[in-house]
Image (cartoon, rainbow, N blue to C red; front, side, top):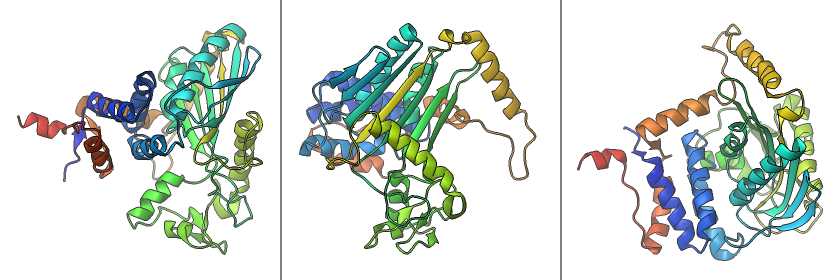
Length: 357
């Protein structure tokens, strides 16, 4: 069966109108909608349009705010701390990046820490905002109200998957790194569980500490946990990365697990670096381009066609989606249909159906 594909602009319009109808300020909708669709364009189907139902419910029950501005806790030029006031994390992060870009061009480097933010969706979708201006970006997120990943050697959840993304300019396409401190994410394990599928590997452990490929162990009583990067043997590496990200996102923002939980959201850390303030952009990109080419030209190991750099697949996926339409993960638009009906909005037609008329 051929996947149904949709025009990216039609999807952006749907998401924007849904959020606006739910009470979000239109200026925020116009920033958030393209970033969520961008996640699907680059293949991150668990953190794009898939987040829209949860965000709409958050707007309805007050867990997420669609109005207002962050409160400035600290502003020392290149160092900024915001209280996000539970506003959409996608909007907060995009706005923080724009501010950090401006400050980094002045100071050479700029950081923004955000506490009490809404969920920020796909980190990779934000990176081009900086790399297109020949700036390096580092972005990390954690949720102090959620625990699903155990520390190495433990069986009780203590962290979230804790994603971190880095965008690195080169003379060609930028390197777009988007990883997490855990082997997998909450969104992907939930999807596999709902579809009654096994995970591709021993990515989780049951409540007794036995490694498993069954996402159902995360829903037992007491629940199992997601394993850190490195799994049962080398999970100290992912554990260490989780501690770093928790410290950057929660420690520097001044709100985290030491405080009473406030519900699903995020603590965020962002850093923009301008290579012009260091060795200069040409020297920076001379080094990063050489590194990228060296990796791409590396002889392929058995089972691999070639070395694929972070971001390569995202660029290919995006180009295909813009040419042929966005392949929306099965069932996602069905989840949005009741919201569209509630607000009397039209659902987009697939490109196949449009071509039939």
